[in-house]
Image (cartoon, rainbow, N blue to C red; front, side):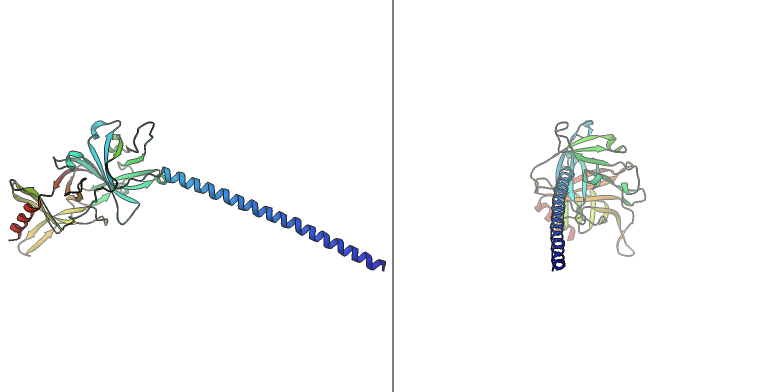
Amino acid sequence: MKKSMKNTIRFGMITTVAILGSFVFMNKVHATDRGNIEQSNIEEVLSSMVREQQVKKRVVLENGYYEVQGINNSNFNGYELLVDNAENNTDKILAVLIPKRVRKGSESGFGYFYEGRSVKKGSSMMLAPINITSNGNLNIDSEMDTRSPVLLVSKGSMGKFNYEFVIQGKNGALDGALLGLVRRGDKKKHPKLRATSKKGYFASGSHKNGPELVVVGTELSIYKNGSSEKTYEMIQLNGDDMFSALVVSEFDTMAEYDVSYEGVNKIAMFFDTYSGKEESVIIATPTHDVGRYRMTAYDSGTLSWIKKLFINLFD
């Protein structure tokens, strides 16, 4: 009887210890879980803060017109930057740096074509020159040369420059210019850059002086003193439908059809004017400097004059 009682007491003590041990273990597990949950919450909050800060620092040039103001070089006062997103790649943009007077069609002048993409984890945007080589090939210069003259776009320090964006010339680009960007007008008004005319035809000129430039489909003709000087075939090479490469086209009388040469001679880019009331086209001829072009802008003529012109052309 005494032995049985001892066994019962011993079993009870073991059971009690086991229960207490289980309770302590469960408390430790719960505490560990709470710690893991708290740690997880902290990490999530920190990650969210980092992401938010990265978004704030990320440089994104929205579609539109930007006025360019020289910070250390006044030679670029009076320039504009036309920006549009690449349709097939949202991470890239096309940017055209052009004198305002040229964009308005007042006269010819020098400008630049750039392809833009994010660099430095999004804290900057690199504008790389779009170049036509001496062999008539079209390329992005930064993909061919580690010392390509590129532009870096970063967010401006409001206390120092008072610009939303600041452009800095690298590797000799724009003679190392430091430029500020000021966005113009409503965000909905942007260049809408196109490789061809939105109507399929385009004519620039006047009743008095005759046609200056005529586009029918993919054929573009430049006129001088009322006579056709040269005809080009417009070829969309960049895949984003934002500009066309122009190759010389001639009519082969023996074959009885147009023959186009392979080498790229010029670039054509159509866009709506800032007011959105008419269409314009820029014809750009490459110079010896990488990405630098002589640009001439042509505005569409009045509807009545264009109608009469095309009736005469197709009679």
